[in-house]
Amino acid sequence: MRATGFSGGFYGRSGIPASYVLGRKLDSIPFSTYHVLVILVLGTVGFVEGYDLALGGSLLVLAKAPLQLTDEQIRWLAVAPTVLVVVGGFTASAISDRLSRKTVMQIGVVISTFFTLLIPLAQSGTQLIVLRVLTGIGLGFAISAPFPIAAELMPKQHRRTYGAIFEVMLASAFTLLPFAGFLLAGNPDGFRLIALPGGLALGIVPLLVHFGLPESARWLCGAAIPKKRSRPSTA
Image (cartoon, rainbow, N blue to C red):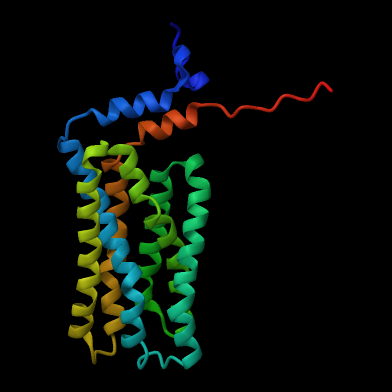
């Protein structure tokens, strides 16, 4: 029996895709410190991106008086970033099979944390809206990747553990923001200070993703299989 491996996309004569065989082997790997590292890195991404995602609600309250936000600017600040998160997510999904989900997530983390770091420099409502819209694009890239990455790196029997921890990290970020907003309420620079933790992650999280997560063997397998070309009709 001849194994065609990556080049043909099938394993032997049984017609089983090589990616399926690889998946069965990866799912048989016992839980180890490697999987703990994957959970911690992706959980950290979830916490930081959850913080940046939920930051908009706090900014609406803390920045309204210092930046003299108009009703129109408040509407844009409340809606536009979320719409761009959706656009970024669809864009990331369309290109992640070519660039790899790890690369897509790194791009998203850098974009979102960079523009969050610039929020303390905003001097008007318009500038704040632009920064949040650009942050939304990065968030769409970043938050669409952790679960597919975990599905590729984690054995199937441990994915529920990862999912639970990831959701707890997201919930922790959503809980931290109202508490921080409560402490900064009444401070004219409160909207600047509350953005700093999410922005300062720029120097840490991309490095964690780069060195802490390998490229998925499942993705590499899929990327190595050439696309079938349609034969020209002889009719």
